[in-house]
Amino acid sequence: MPNRAATRVVAHRGASGTLAEHTLAAYKLAVDEGADALECDVRLTADGHLVCVHDRRVDRTSNGRGVVSTLELAQLSELDFGSWKAARAATGTADADDTGADTDADADEADWADAEHTSVLTLERLLEFATGCGRRIELAIETKHPTRYAGLVERRLLELLHRFDLVTPADGERTPVRIMSFSQLSLRRVRELAPAIPTVFLMERVPLRFRDGTLPHGARIAGPGIDLVRANPGYVAALHRAGHRVHVWTVDDPEDVELCLRLGVDTIITNHPRRVLDQLGR
Ligand code: G3P
Ligand code: CA
Image 1: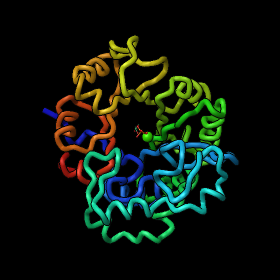
Image 2: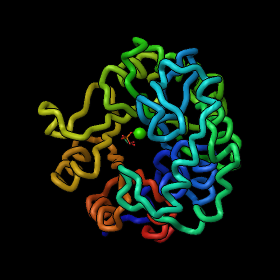
Image 3: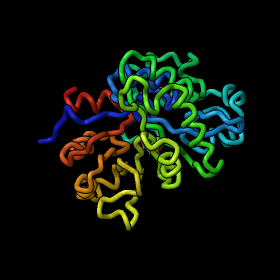
Image 4: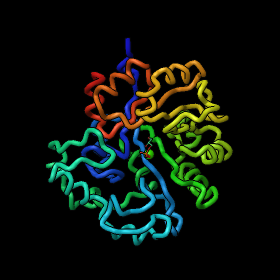
């Protein structure tokens, strides 16, 4: 019997099925909707700030053009990271990577002009919000293209997490943070800098040497994509047998949620946290 209550729900880029991804508004909505954790991607700007942006370029999610790592925070701050989503919501156009896009009431009511809906989000601002939101909320932070600055992404990330007392919290609580990456090198750097922080090895395909359910040295959690799980459902059991937890992304289709539950997946990462929580009966 699937344990619906035990399955954790992570808001992928915030409640990004409803509001523009990686905006503060999308994260606030995710917390209001009851998500257990917030997922974000981080990249370094040209002047060394960590910002929450998925793509290498800003073109898809803003009204600007250019590569994130070549732009300064002040330049990113002039861009509008929200209106593209409003336009899609108004026309009912699905996001390119969203299997379950909707134009629900939250989107209709959203104040698209508000800065929380349109500003680039720094990781610092997201941590401020998450640590002050009034309840424990976990953070699943993904490092993107970490080699460009030869480890600087991980160093800056750990500096910031230390500043927020999120690495080995003084209150003795376990850290609410985990760091994810498709890059084994990035995870290795994180482990060396902060062994207490759990790492998640993201996979679109299973590398040959990890077919038995083992993971790169030190990685505690597996992060397979839902396509991989659909094609190879037995892999979840192999990961569990090897002692790893399994966090699957990006699970928006109710049938995929059921599949994850049947397989005993520990955590579902979704663009639609409220919908998934409803399906879990939470
Ligand atoms: O949560 C993991 C997932 O976000 C990885 O894929 O492309 O959405 O960052 P992507
Ligand atoms: Ca991600």
